[in-house]
Amino acid sequence: MVRNMKIHPNTTVEIVGMPLDLGQSERGTDVGPTAIRYARVVERLRSQGFVVIDHGNLEVPAFSKVADDERPTVIAEVNRQLFSLCRAIESRGGFPLVLGGDHSVVIGSVAASTSLSRTGLLWVDAHGDFNTPETSPSGNVHGMPLAALLGRGDDRLTSISLDANVRAEDVVLIGVRQLDPLEREALRAAQVRVFSMRDIDQKGIHVVMQEALALLSHTTKLHLSLDMDALDPHDAPGVGTPVRGGLTYREAHYIMEEVAGSGRLGAMDVVEINPMLDVRNQTAITAVDLILSALGQRTI
View 1: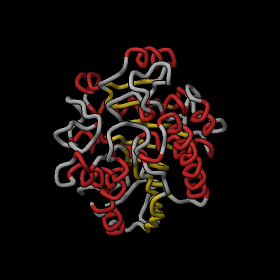
View 2: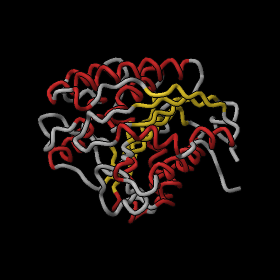
View 3: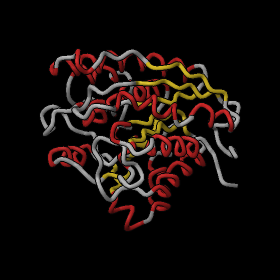
């Protein structure tokens, strides 16, 4: 049942696929949007009463056709396209649901949300994604999108959100359990609020979500960016950078349910599904379950 929230059955959910795998070295995330559709995301949303428009996938150059040093340029170009489309969707009252792709795809979608109104960014991820080219051990762009959104790093990436007003105090990370040393220092210096798995172990997911939503209560709406590697690999094996000790299936659902209950969710990304590493499409099926929870599906 969908109830007691901004998102309701008359809302139009507009799906955009971003088959991008240029932000990392593990091939396969470009097939993520197809896997989520194969897991019947459109049919399940419609069964809950939502109007659904699927815009298909944005065109992204193949991995093999892009030189390593040109990847940030191409990632920036496709994110500008995504920015324009998501901004148009939100401007007409629709709900953008972006299917990735690696996590670098959200530079455009988050910037679109924050360009329209002050938006709280709830970043559910095993990683901080707060590296820059100078701090990243791997140089992979999918470890840099949050930094880019806050104006740090490669100018090609930061330029997308110049007018988006993303502020450190508007960002909360949940589920973090693996940070690079300089990335950890940068997050602390920027005073971005991070709820690690240790916090969840100590406080419980209920208290963590109460605190997280309170920290973002000053914003107009919420943008939820869900990296499926936030979940433990047992529940989400089909990701490129799995880290043991993550969110349980039930904890992940609780996060989604609390976001739905806030009545302020305005946009959502689901990223980093790699069907090549998955088991019977389990990670995509779980992603669809979580999408439905975030949009208000309840047991009773």
